[in-house]
Image (cartoon, rainbow, N blue to C red):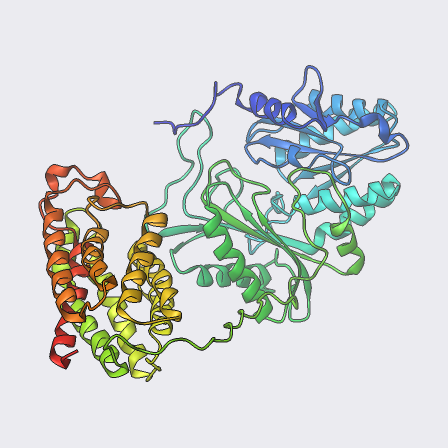
Length: 578
């Protein structure tokens, strides 16, 4: 069975893709009657050397994405993974010649069909009196012994586009560009690895891999590589690739050693996520630098794909300052990345963390709560939450991912670790602020964020006073912040239900003569009742809001945890006689 593709038709997909590129790029034009894209300012190139490249479609953005000032003049595209016809190649050569260019360099990947068709078109053009030369790019570093057909042309080809384009932009002649580029092309290598193959529109995958296998040294047309290896961490895979590419016993190796300066390409073969690409780029740069190799520039992205192949290729090109200048030269090609002209190796990549602002004098504990009691309260909260871990997880499995208890337990253990450090607990505002940071860093999930918001806001009123009315105001501030960003409201079956119920009781602290424990006792009972009532509510926020209310017949675990925290506070203060 063929794979699914977003196409109008198998036969017309290459034409449609090129038409879409040209339609969305005013710098490009199609050559009538041919699958050829050219610079729309072709007539401004009089007296300059033109650069043409191409090959089968399916490698986008190569090659048409690299048309522009400072790179290619035009591209001839074949059908998917098929060489372009001789007639179209010849038409492109004629078009640039008739625009007044003084010669054409064909940059061709080393595949039999491309060599034959571009070569035949070149000979026909020469017979017409047109000055044409051809450079064959063969940068594949997969094979350890020389094949009769030579090394395949891979992603290193785009570096040749760039170097040749910069030389042409300088006004260099065809013969000299050909000589320079031919030498530079021998200083690079490319190696690919993939999690699976790709599929041409209308066809099945070109090869199959076991679930725990990856293919090393495969080509850009879905052809199998040189060996299969077991899937491993990226660092190990990249190490294997670099070892293979630089092994001097490998006939196609790149002579990269300690002290070498290179341009690195981390090329997405089509189906990798940006996340994976970043991990691979980090590994490649780090491991090269660990070998004493200077990474002068790093290109990371999709440059020469193999349709949807979920793999990556690494390209290494040895460079000196003159070559690096050509790599850095300006270009308008849309697929060429905008890079700073700064070496990757040696650049300061980490900025120092901001310093903590100086702490202003804040109110010390009051309202009958001492520093010792705060420590006891925090410790009791922690032991309570750790003891509830399995119960909260069980409640959470009905409406979430079953980790509410684990999340609260993780937070509790982080607080216990902090308490062992012997922090100052004289300022409630500072304690709440520190707890906020700790929970944001260590608790994780939406619970960590919500508690962090609550504690950060609650700390603000307590900076000036710590009497009972201010503790009530702190509770109000915390709930307001939690509602503002969490978008939950009382009755939505969340932890807010317990917190809100307690906060309503805390309003009594704002009345003259109010006492700590009687109000707190009422607040705990209200919070526990609110938590129990959540089992009859329809969820309005969080993951539970996506679950049918018929399936929700247990209390919300977040609300249960919040009520348990209030119960722990009350028990300690009752024991201490606050």
